[in-house]
Image 1: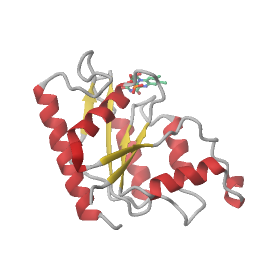
Image 2: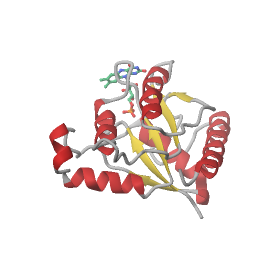
Image 3: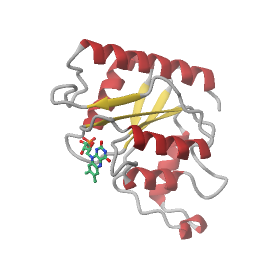
Length: 184
Ligand code: FNR
């Protein structure tokens, strides 16, 4: 069956380059996967008191991630790490202890930045978190996209052939990774 991929975009901004990147990957996956965009901007800030009685938004978030076959993280770099909004969503979906929605789910990490290192440090931090959460994360290719005007439009249309080819290669490898780790 076609895998469903839960997509967490670490930017809430209208006109986000990372959202554009997610749309581009969705187009490149075509009918080989469905992308389920997870809204993370309206979640409560995680508080360990929740563990006694989980808030409805947290229950919904976990259900949405659990229902997916894989998770794609598309993140900007904020101050050399991931945005707080993304970390909060991860914390919320990973608790109470022993009841994480992420365990065993195949994952990939990509990101776009206006800076030349293209979210490399943020992604490295995120990989550390995902290792702890017991997610098999695709190692290669790494996607550190240096975003320049016109590279990808809001609909996910890619402006040049070499970027399209590179991102197609990533998409194909991720789909193969999901097939290999499915059922985890
Ligand atoms: C940034 N930006 C940034 N870029 C980068 O390459 N490394 C960094 O550490 C940071 N730090 C940072 C902190 C904060 C608070 C903001 C708002 C921005 C710039 C960032 O790459 C740029 O704003 C991107 O456009 C953000 O991604 P979206 O929103 O376009 O998806």
